[in-house]
Length: 400
Ligand code: C5P
Image 1 (tube, rainbow, N blue to C red):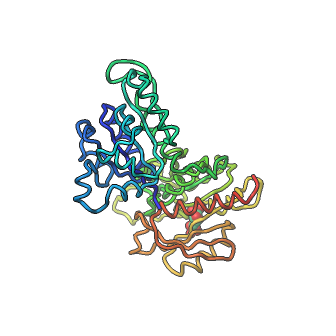
Image 2: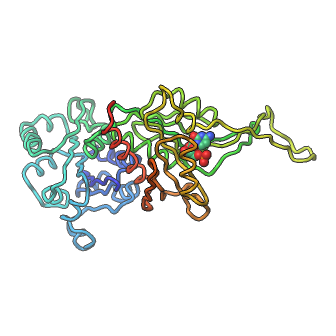
Image 3: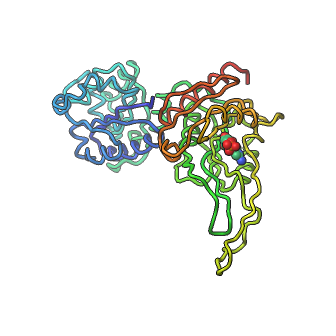
């Protein structure tokens, strides 16, 4: 299941930064549903919040009741974390004193979900004993805090009270959502995307891989604390947070980048590597010139998965491959796992109509030893999370 937060946006000038925060959280594959206080609507519009979060925006207790889709109790319990950003001095005071006179404070009072507070206020308001006492109360009740930073403020003053940068708040949210980091201290190498094998300076041989599954795996391993090197063929995807990406174009470059990234504890080969490359890439664009079409001589590319699986001191202790097949999935996957020498294999059906290439859903068979386990159809991000959890479980039972 995707992690889900309720973001309560308070009415301060820093509210505009919550828009960037929503964008960053979605990049980290965290679902965000927003609640705006009445004064927050004067700083950011529900429409922009809804557009960025891709979820309904709640502003008033009454509209929620009329909506009857979800009451405030259900809403407050539907999330893994409640985040208050920006938390103004007023909102902090109302939280500390148990107010429940609007949707935001009612949610905060009705919840038993952890709460993370990102304060933002004028330096004097921050330093006022009333605010400090309210903060102390909230801390003793278990509220988590991120910031504030010290610096120049919108009001022109300087000191503590400035909202933390959205990147720092996103990381604090991730830490609160995933407090256990079972892969910390582990290096995970992931290959993803297609390769492009050049024919001449303007043409290449490629495939339909989007890289989504490999990128999701890199993100899921990073969320569990791994140091992740993502060796990526050409894709249009943004690099997941906390991941080091090495961009390559061809299979030969991908192998070199993987070797350079070793040693690693685990290698996951999710890339759709071109099996062949053109023996001689033309230095200039090939021309039609009225003659017969050119004949391309192909040579086999190195097999990265098989190379990484070879016994040796640099072999990652866990090597995982993918088998993209269009027929007799299980038999092909079993044979491929044996041939490549990897430890685990995830086999998926990429035949026309499955929409696996480029889509967000996938269905895999998971092969470990002689067992073949069918996983139900799910989002690629959920497959990634399940796989990362398996890897963590495997390492928790083996010494470093
Ligand atoms: O042989 P096939 O391409 O079907 O094998 C698929 C698996 O092998 C995937 O894990 C893929 O990333 C990996 N592979 C590789 N290098 C190649 C070809 C495939 O790492 N040249």
